[in-house]
Length: 219
Ligand SMILES: C[S@@+](CC[C@H](N)C(=O)[O-])C[C@H]1O[C@@H](n2cnc3c(N)ncnc32)[C@H](O)[C@@H]1O
Image (spheres, rainbow, N blue to C red):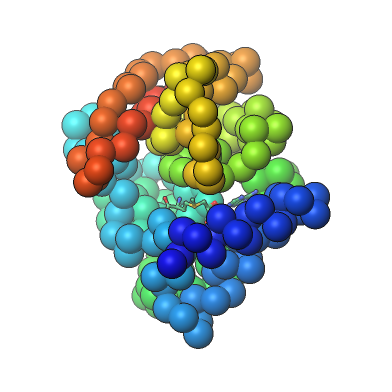
């Protein structure tokens, strides 16, 4: 049910030239219908993030993290649990309100903000930027700008982690979420970042989903 509703809202918002409007329209329904109305809200940390943090032995002690399109907050709480000072933002004020309600004792700073109009003081501020699944719900025309915005938040020596659905250039993108191509993802390197790792893999979901997981560093 959630995915069909999300696709209908996305289609209508994009058709009227408001490609970001449908996120709030969707999350506003959580209060009356519950979180299952949001198709990506698993209410647990993203296993593709957790596996990367474990494998890379990432520890947050003394470091700052920015969680992009944080939704209901589970990834932000995971990074906080691992010792990061976390700011988490989403364009949907209802998502942020729900995240704050779910984690009332949290030390995460939850902020309603638009990736395309971020606070000026976020520039080069964060040691880790975590982006999962936001690029893939943005129309293709917004992705280049979105990636340069993401890159702008990375501090010297900081890391941008991107996790997204993946496709080959020739594959049909199908319906939302629209998988990224390698070329789209590599736009991160046009903003002064260097690629430090790149994975193209099938995840553990049933059915398995092809993903990119890539990390970029500001030298
Ligand atoms: C597919 S969801 C993924 C949510 C979360 N990252 C996760 O993995 O469960 C994409 C999220 O990005 C948010 N979003 C979309 N466009 C945004 C923008 N311009 N600025 C901030 N957040 C945005 C949406 O509201 C939504 O919560």
